[in-house]
Image (cartoon, rainbow, N blue to C red; front, side):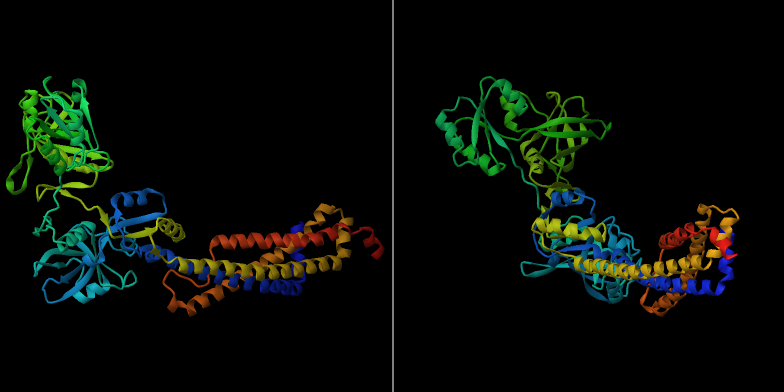
Length: 605
């Protein structure tokens, strides 16, 4: 009943009510438009920053060597990095590309890519396979190339005064839009760029059949075993570690020798183990020991800390874990055992004279040997020799075991085409890195700079948008505060004056039996009705003006962008704020209504 009375009273004084609604709307509507401009502009700028992955890119400005372990640590250290891939030297990553007809040629820069590359994926292009590439629009235009066509990439080097070229075909998997990059660039897998750099450095690249030197793995050892027919004197022991690269020597008891060496020499032999302290021993260090013992009838066997290996038989796929020890032809002489020899495939169809012998429980024949040391992995095809050896152990010739042992110090890989154990790249000259969000750019940059890595980012541009957001929000709230105070004052004065004008009528309602708590609702309902009308009118005005603004600036906006806009949550907050403030304004008038005296109505009569 009170609500109906309040509504009818507003309709009765429609002229005054209309003026009040217009007055309130004239305050709310400009605030809506101002906030819509502030939100729309900042949101558009922020979306452009977020949607363009180039703004999340972090580029190194210094040249240094970044190891694989550094990349592994960087990628897993926190969730603020979305993508990182190593890069080779810039000067070694340039190639000449020619189209299918060979009529057009263009120099391109190679950039490494990998799964999850945001620059490609967020521009609607898939990451290319190993035999494919993604071209920038300028590169594709220069070569008159289209997706699905083939190109020929050519790398050039100078060897002994003559030019050599290494070529390989690639298929165009995608073309990047101009906004992604304006450079003439081809995005390929990292192994392709590594191959080009190796070729330019004069190394062979079996992947593409390019000739050159192979970075073959070399054996390294932690020590050397000395089997002497007579015990060595203290002077001889000192001489063995003097200028040979070894730091200490110890005599091993029979039971110690079996556990450390993997075999037990006969009791007539004195067993010594010379070790290195920090750096691994090379074949030259071992030769120095051999020279020192010349003429003494001693046997010298290179020694490694036993490697944990897994052998998987090709015949029955059975896998066993074993400790790998070194042996030589001389071991059979001192142990009285004919050690069976296996082999590993070698270049040009030959077999390496390196054996792998294991316990009888594993079938002889082809197998796969796997080694894992300090996070590094190596997998090598081998042939298992026949014979009986102590259980839980595998044995390999010193040259092969030493090459496997190199995995403790650096990356080693087995190349199927070359049939060789090759050294892997130790480091990279740079990287492509993208932060997870624009808010993470600053944190990642600070972390890299703490490591002494100077980088370039769009931190300043991101900071400008943040500062613009901060200052425009501050200005908006200052203007909004003035407007809200004005709206509250106008509504409060109007409702208070309305209660004063209608004292007689309200007193009569009190005489008719209305309670004070019921009469309090009368100005509150009126305030809510008037502010609701003003709110609806303001939203209509905002929708009209915002459409005009967005239409005027449509040439500068993308399809999904708006210069003046508000979200649904903003309108809900607006409605709650306006209705809440109108309730507060009406409360003053409601308090005046509670102080009305019904007797005044009788005196007026």
